Length: 117
Image (cartoon, rainbow, N blue to C red; front, side):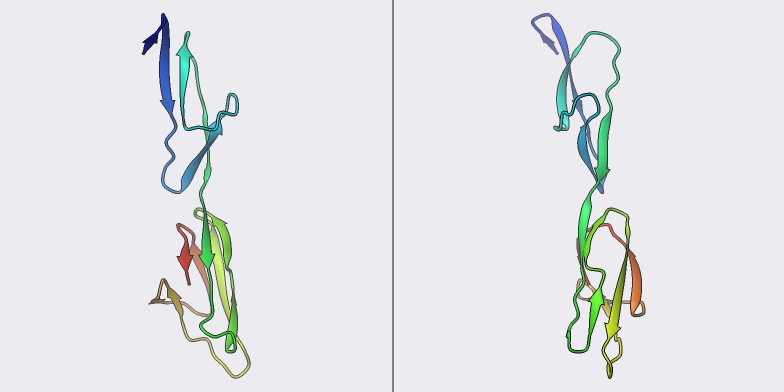
């Protein structure tokens, strides 16, 4: 684009799924789109980071036992979820978003979104 004799270029940093734009490396600009004045060859570097998601872990009845693993995780992290039954009770099953899933009392899941277990 020409503007008062200057040539301008618009740069847009687009993050892949699971990642987010952080800034441009040359000056702390934190918007993904920027306009630069073209005066010659130049190189611009966009900084990206992983999205963060929450794994929600709940017991259907805390009298029967407790669970651990609830928390915030970065995209593609592995989260270990553990169910510990109280005396007199046994672990039954895990559910992901209300649907039964395979696995024992301790499972490892890859984090790709907010999920309820």
